[in-house]
Amino acid sequence: MLKADICYYNGSIYTMEKQGARVEAIAVLNEKILFAGSSAEALKIPAGQTVNLEHAAVIPGFIDTHCHIAEVAEAPLRIDLMQARSIQDVLDTLAGRKNNVKSGEWIIACNLDCGKLREKRFPDRYELDSVSKDIPVFIHDIGLHNFICNSIVLELAGIDRGFDKSGSELLELDDDGVPTGVCHEHGLLGYLNAKRPSIFGTEEKALDVLYKVLKQCAGMGLTTVHTYDGFAGSMLDDFSAYQKLERIGRLPVRMILNRNMQRAVNNETGAVSGFGNEKIKYGAMKLFVDGTYAVRSAYLLEPYADKADWKGRLIHSPAELKMLMHDAYKKGNDIATHVIGDGAAELVLKIIEEIYDPENPCRFTMIHCHLVHESMRRRMAKLPVVAAMQPVFVSLYSTGTIEERLGAERAKDFHAFKSMQDAGVMVTGGSDAPCADQNPMKGIDEAVNRISFSGTVFQPQERVSVYDAVSFYTKNAAYCGHEEKIKGTITVGKLADFITLDKDIFSVKREDVGSVKVTGTYVGGRKIL
Image 1 (cartoon, rainbow, N blue to C red):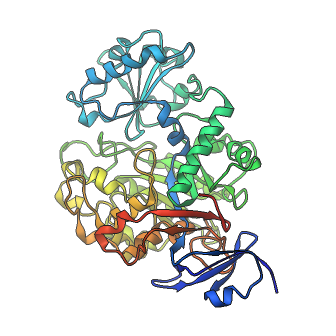
Image 2 (image 1 turned 90 degrees about the vertical axis):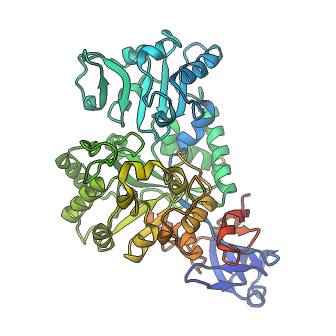
Image 3 (image 1 turned 90 degrees about the horizontal axis):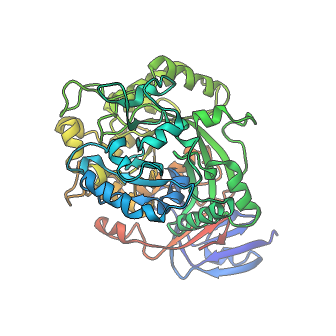
């Protein structure tokens, strides 16, 4: 008889193979589940260690299918403008931190929400120049879709009146054709990031911060994290950063690294989706298709309710988008697309239908899917498409902004979790951190209860069961990374990634789901937190 490494017994272990499926014990060998069944049978298996779970509720480890770990790591080192309510607030906050900036460093700020500013616009280069003409000032908005800088940054990046390089159509100009310092979406980030110094200073500090961030993920019950390239060209977006942590025993969770198209194109190894191992691997190649509702850059089929002559903005032309997606797909890559508006969703679906090859095992991930109508949902269900959604956005965007931008009728399809699921679409849960709370329990709560920021239930017909919400972050999420055969359920042969809870999430009242806490996180059968 095989000897197990560890036997966990006397638990209430929800396997998630189907609703209500439970076992009392599991035995683990070489990081995988050797046995799942009764405590009496498990204790007959020779084991190096036995652990009494003391009736604790156990579920598979959570998987965040969309976040930006580099940005999460950098956020505490940036100036937070979340509380700014006017451009003067922004300038005062930046000026108050100017004396802390060392030679060669930039003033870097985040979380600016122009919708909350009295002026309802971003500050321009000249206003930021009043903070400093000598120290570069760089700000990104709360949605990571708009970037604002002072004159010296534009000068360093070579962005001037005659700038006509790729992405220039996303450069805001004044009446005289001079750049205002506001850059929309991501077309110009490469020019700006090429001049930005690392916010960490040294690789040693960067890796230490990365380790601490991933430990925080583990503390939330995350055992696998899908990170997408951030927006700073950070060293923490590189495969090697995670390899180095693993080599010194400081990689607490499993990682899937999804790459922005430009970074992938420049990947000299030629590695494609799936390259790596069970601890670190390459995921999808990502393309931005549109923007956000906050600044009306999400691309809609019909004009905005509060701006009748405007449908939003496409980042690529339809022809260019198809070419980029098809080329990457043919090379063996999964394709992930950022789609917020229904116009963006319709365009991406049409392209997928045109390029899909049943002989190609690669999959398509449509990230966010804020506005997907019934006919689109039926089409998605017929394709190898994953809807990587973020339930935490319900409370963030469901009060005021969505109905104001879309109108009451279109808003009914906002984050339509249940309708997606009922149509047969594979729905997964993520956070988009640092844009929103990364705690999966928060996401599960919002998928189940859909409580808006104002405290009302937003579109109650789209609430899902607790089992379905947990599935978004476990077995469905495993599918997103082609890992449904090794993760997502507590099943013999799969990786022993699981978490313990302080309460049985399937027994508490619906409204109390958000109060459930993770008490232990196990990766490969070993407790890491």
